[in-house]
Amino acid sequence: MDEERKTVYLLLFTFLILLAGFPVFAETQGENGIDYMALVNKLNPLPDGWEDALKTVTITNSVGDEVEAEVRAFSAYEQLRDDLEKNDDIYLELDSARRSIAAQQEIMDRFIEKYGADYAAKTVAQPGYSEHHTGLALDLYFRVRDDAGGFTDVYYNEDMEKDEYKGIWEKIHEKLADYGFILRYLEGEEHITGYRYEPWHIRYLDNTDIAGEIMSRPGLTLEEYLAGREAPEPAVDLSGSELYTEEELKDAMLAAKCMFASWAGCELHSIRYAGDEANNEENLNWLNSLEEGAEYEQAAELLMNFHTDRDVGGAWEPDQEYIDYQWWLARRKDSGWEIVSTGY
Image 1: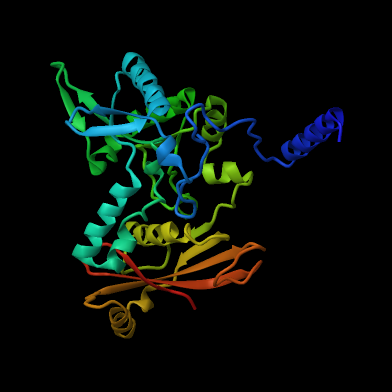
Image 2 (image 1 turned 180 degrees about the horizontal axis):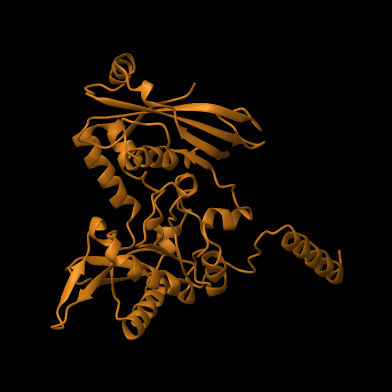
């Protein structure tokens, strides 16, 4: 095929892709040898060779912790930080950024030794599947200046999530795309990202146009942008309980949605609370029998409707709607929900 015909076919192919609504990347491989658009989540591991190609810088933050980040991501963060300080009186700091696979494995090994393999698998990200391995994911915190000119570090998650700081996060988020960042873990999209809403977790893309497009479309995740398709918003029903508060049921659903994100080829359509009658002695005895040493005192049943794609493998039937798929969660009254069993 001559060069002229190749060019025509390439232009036609690009036009068809754009017409279908899929993003086109002319070049995502950065000058540092890494792909700044790489997707790392519960289903997609860190690409081979990434750690060898990665170039990083290490700094010490305001609380004395060393933080390592990819060089371009850190440079963009500095520009974002300077903008917010100069124009909004917001003083950013880096809580964490890159975490090596080896370091993640050490964390996993410690949890396995102390709590057992089952507990570790539920609470620690699998080594190789954390976005923090990339060096492109940055966790922020900020400092609040008082009238005397002194600073207080707002460092812990529970403090940063207080209502009084929502305005600060809004100002930070408004400027992320200007420097090539996106907010990575969005509220309500846990069934796609696999993680709860984190206003402090940002991701560098090295492309302000793409970052701007993602940030301008509320609820759009990086997973959906790269796939070229937005998933439907699932229906959520928290009604019908005199035993649990709405917040308690939200916590249960959050746990289920985060695990659902690791089910490849599945699209969530709805999730609802099955009712207080599931919290009975028979079900508690059954759930306690599934976990060695468990002493659960309360149970909750959630029901999901979801669809599998045509190419799904493993335990799922392809192109099928699963109706009222059961999720069983349990807890002691002074602890959080644990997913104990799923299935019909």
